[in-house]
Length: 384
Image 1 (cartoon, rainbow, N blue to C red):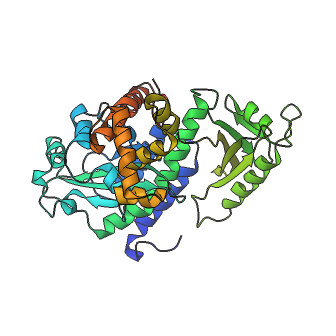
Image 2: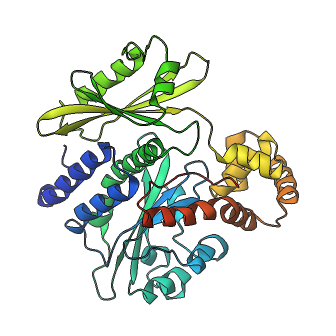
Image 3: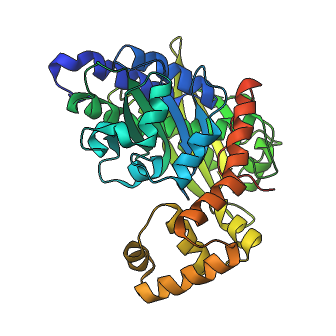
């Protein structure tokens, strides 16, 4: 691995390597967060425990949290995140140029007027660092919060550089863990499937539903034990990544047209254990973001109104929406007027909060219960 943090920070480089390797394994999400926490503990100083979040890449709304020792996230903190005037909110950091910010930076060095700071202080945390977890492909899958007590050194540039180097691996790991969770505990007919192959291309294990996915791919014959060419090819690419230890987090991805005419996405990563190599292949439908059909069915939004709403949820301004959709600012405002009427709100903030508390907060709370019950966590909004 190239030197990222300087010679004196070789321990941090080893930590980055460890988390990159963790991200490749088929963990459930809580296991991945716990293992990553252990690595962070010896690499960057923080108070109590990291705060791990998953975000829906389509909306940047929170879908789960994991704070060891805090099984239930305070309701007033969620209200502050989506209703209050404050700084250092997850969506703001997720959309920022740098992808990382401290509360002291966001408040010009005096965080005492921030509701976030007041909440943190009730638990003994003075400083707050929020980092975006964005994959190499550009999708934001989560956020990381780190804290320090009063009187401790401020998070400095080296700390932030270290966390930013970790972020893509943490994002890949979160995405993979959510897929593994859905594959091992399917929630519906379109749930992903997980297939583990030995280095001799023998099937070691599968999750429910894999047979259906593989049967839908061209030139495969599950009954005869013949894997689709796309799976074998991806497995070979994944296996080769183990020969390059300088890129331990590399994950092979392939998009394949099924026999039925729909697109399927394959994710592959090599697993190395006790000298033997195996390949984990995850198969999932290449369906549009779950928030899209939800917005259309729940509120009767048109395709264009849905697109505007998605960008509003992500924190885009009128000018940014107009540029992305290639329309005038006046057209955006007219769409907003229609959206407000259909959803029964009067402002952008109310729109974001309504979508979150109607469709994401139920998922967020359900994931809290799933954590307690040792069940896989879910991503995306929850349909009612």
